[in-house]
Image (cartoon, rainbow, N blue to C red; front, side, top):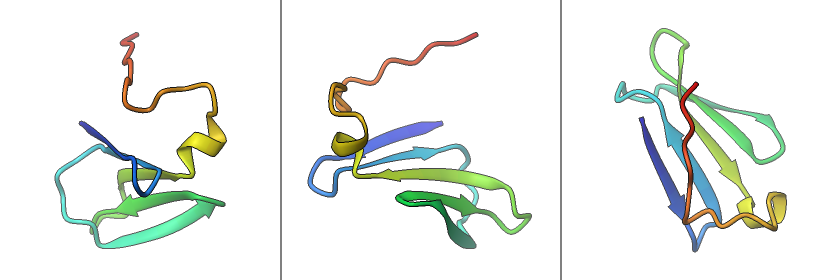
Length: 66
């Protein structure tokens, strides 16, 4: 899993798998899912991160494992 924040684009991308992206679909305003050839989600893009999460610092992402 890889997480990338593009400050200029104000976009956060969570890559779940290294499979090639075959299709993308905006499932909600500013939320885009990337799919592989088996229609499995391999990436999630969140646009307008600073607007959605004004109190968060997307450059400092903390992961918690259950």
